Image 1 (cartoon, rainbow, N blue to C red):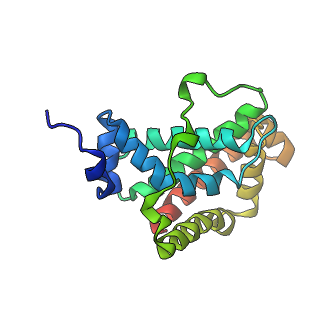
Image 2: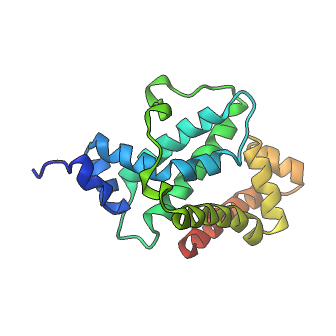
Length: 197
């Protein structure tokens, strides 16, 4: 079996190649991926809040989602790795918010030391790339508000508050099936929009 790429080789690798290395168990590859995406994770983390959770909790969950994205990314699909990772991170944060109602904690074995990750060299010396990264993140946030209908926005907000489909249906005076249909449309619209970012 071909050996792992070295940390120096990893710096010049594309995201899909890094993801493959992470899937093979290359820890240096994940450290490089985390350096590249720490800004994006931090931006998304700043958009969410949940009772009993701090910003650092969201950062840890974001790293875990990034690791999962590396392991499940299929380059044959239309979405770029960046867009795929963005969806995975957002989904993880939504799950964290839902868990906040049950006051569950983040498993200790999933904690990654974010403080040990050095500042990203990937975009730090490149202001243009950093601005593009921030703009891409903002575009994703805008996508949610620009493409969802008023009902879908209400359903999503209630879902993020941790309400079940039955509770959302009661709150919005619609059927549980309507809630389920709305959630499916929300997922489709976000994934479709991510492909265009």
